[in-house]
View (cartoon, one colour):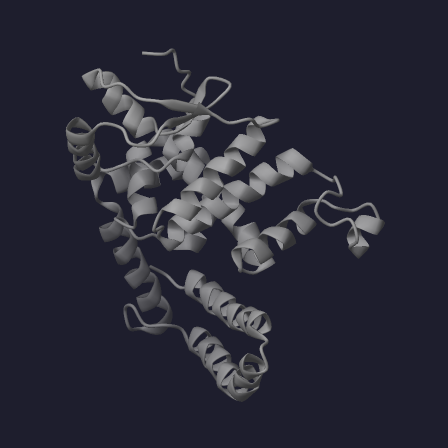
Length: 282
């Protein structure tokens, strides 16, 4: 069996399989073998960690294919794009990968005018993270602010994953629902706070504690546990009224072939709802 190099950063990037899914994959490989080659870059494994582990444990032969990249950041972006294209991802996973893509692009391109040479910002010599966020927002059909928030979420999940890979897996899989705003806040929070959250998630106590805290906060503010604040309800009402008011205009855009513009308008409302959703307690 050929000598393959394992990279912790690449391996850490990929979603961890739960025990049941891993065993199903193992049974399939034992019965049918490896159908797709493992992917390498300079001898480093960049796709197929679970398959490689199973083949190594059971001495099963496999094929490999080498891809060429100029940098580690380009490999990271390839892994991210590959994961997004081949899997049915949760919204948390999508946010995580978008955030990682954003960070990798900033590290790779910095202020280079590769993707926005004709933009006003490029002419002024300013092509930092703002232009990267705009480009990725177009690629993923989300707002620029969403991309920027996704970076914080990715940082928080990376921090949690370094403490507990199992806690990270539970968050990404949706097994443990966690408010995105609270998760983003962990990116800049003291390590002790992230450690506490990771331990609670791994032990299965996070949901109970978060729900209790949220009820106590709402009870203190509004008298009824779990109810939304008047301001939050007012914000929701404004979003809904604006959407209804502009609905006919959006239909006209669709009928005149402006599907891309229509999607942009709808995405703006979705982003407003996501912001409001993120501000609510668990």
